[in-house]
Length: 198
Image (tube, rainbow, N blue to C red; front, side, top):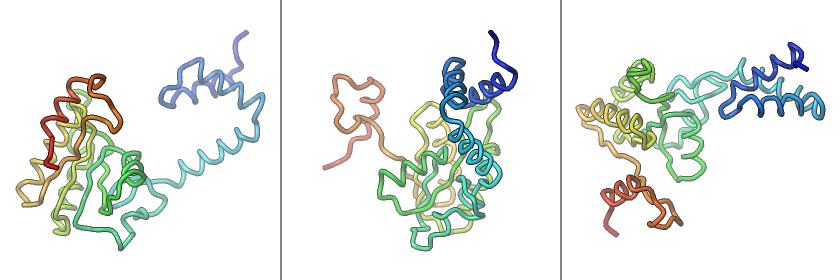
């Protein structure tokens, strides 16, 4: 028996979520309709409210309900430090797991010429304008350690360098608690070349 058009539509809508395939979408749809209609209503309401009211911070481009996000509006943060990340989720991770007290700039992705994603698509013109304001003394490049993330970090470094601003890159390599024999060769190579004095 085929699902009704409304159930099929719900399943297709759920498949827009990352990692949700046809079976997972079917399981979620039937769960919401059979066992948790109140949860479904709450989900629909929260999703509608977020889509209608959440935009981007005018300064750093992270997700925000206000013109300036709470981090950019916080006068206690160090405005001379600017950490460049790929996504709002990266900002959350940095805030949760580090003691970084500067500001952020969210690219919303990385350079990928083959996919048509150039400098304008990730807001590098806005980043340059921000750097030209003169407050930033150090740019911390925290793009992902992928080929695209490295290319993006290199490109940003070339934009920053002529301005006389210090450029740093977050370290990456062997995870805390990891054992060398199980670490990927590229990861171990990067960790070794990025070693520091203790």
